Image 1 (cartoon, helix red, strand yellow):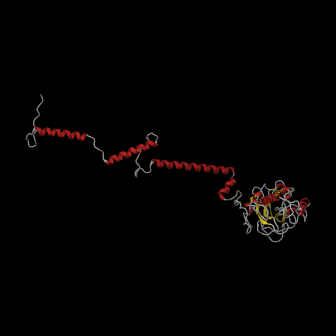
Image 2 (cartoon, helix red, strand yellow):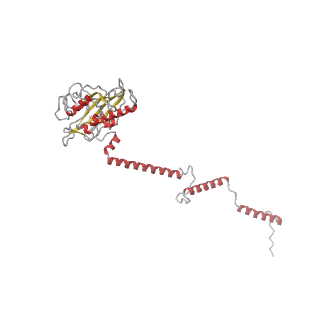
Length: 395
């Protein structure tokens, strides 16, 4: 049997009716249930939660599915500074730069170890002996306007025989003899002219650069390109090679040194000059050649170290004839005007060899005389004869 609840009283002491009291209890129960129910999140809360979900997904993708326990995901903003992936990218770039610098440093050390002279010239613009590193000149396409400037006055050495000379920038040997482009001239075909230019080049190489010719042997290849019908020229050159004298000087055609007296330093002769082509009056063509050859030499005596240079400038006109017009042999050359100037050789000595002078050695032949000339001035006209007795401004 349930107990009867006592009647409620109001603030004034009057009793509360039963229906009012029951409504109060029901309303209180509903308020309690409403306060315990979940509430709808605000718009800002939903935005923050969504951004955190996105950052967690991105971090998971970068980490290959593994959570980064050391660096929790942080929203990018003014409080956090640069994003982690940006900082990692800069660190990777720094590592790559340091690696490249290390490789370059290692290559530089290797170059210094293998070739210290070359490394010095690259760093300072100087050669290993202190002179200015020479840059090769481009091929000549016309007569120069004057002599080249003076270089470092330091003397040549066995290691650097062209030191202090403009020849340091000349081409090496045959590389300095470049024929012009062939073209049909004077009734001769382009092919015939091309062959004549090649033969002229071969003649110059054999007469001035062939080591056998330089030590006094017969220039067989050069002589073989002369037309046998030009008998007078062949006889004159042959007489000079076999029995040189004042009237038969082989140096007007070839360069030779007495092997018992001197030897070439190394195996490089420097070359500078040009070759051009003209039509010949009456048919055919003329090949004009003007070349300077610089020979570094040392005495043949054992232990010799002093280097002297002999400079030979040679001009030669080679005629290419048309057998249909002028009696000649197909494929051979005729020698026209030839002149030579030899700087640093004994004056008046006609034994078929050039004789360079070395300091501290009595001069052979007459003393040089006349106006001072620059043997490297490739624009000055050449005199007749060998031009061996002039005072030289430099060698």
